[in-house]
Length: 242
Image (cartoon, rainbow, N blue to C red; front, side, top):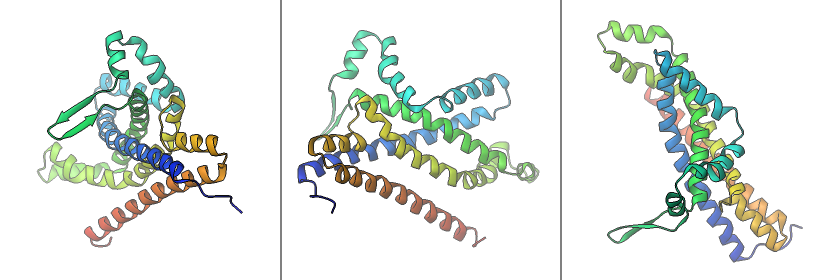
């Protein structure tokens, strides 16, 4: 009914692409979370000269298509680089640390990581900011009245509640990062969508190629959902089931 299964060579292509997708998405989520949190702090800062430029920055990255941003980082940004740097970025490199070696990723990976991270960080920053603003101001006032410094109030009172509030939408952004990573195929990165397209082109087995890719994407999203549910239950137990 569904045709012949894919040969082992083509399955290997798909799983290699899946590995690239996982690595890119994980790295993006980690860096975007740290950058987004920093942007959130600057966004809610009192000085206008800090908050307003960051507001403009976030607006640009949130309101322009990710595909356009990826094209900019891959085709446009290198225009401003010196020729030597451009050649270095496109040449293979490896760092040796004893018996271990780290290969410099291809420029498609670097451009995809930069574009996807900056795009995701803009949304993560707003999720953090929404979480902070959702905490009643009286919580901070009470903490200060109990003798906490401003930093202690932020660390022990405001931030735990803000992160708890922001966690569900943050997980949604992580899922989006996994799905949005498929757009890097447009700049030639051999991730899962790129690999499935290659398999389909060579074998003409459209259902098998894209069906397996779809199942792999769904598996990652479901894993993130389960992780979020586990964190929610763990937090509920830590707070006495409230």
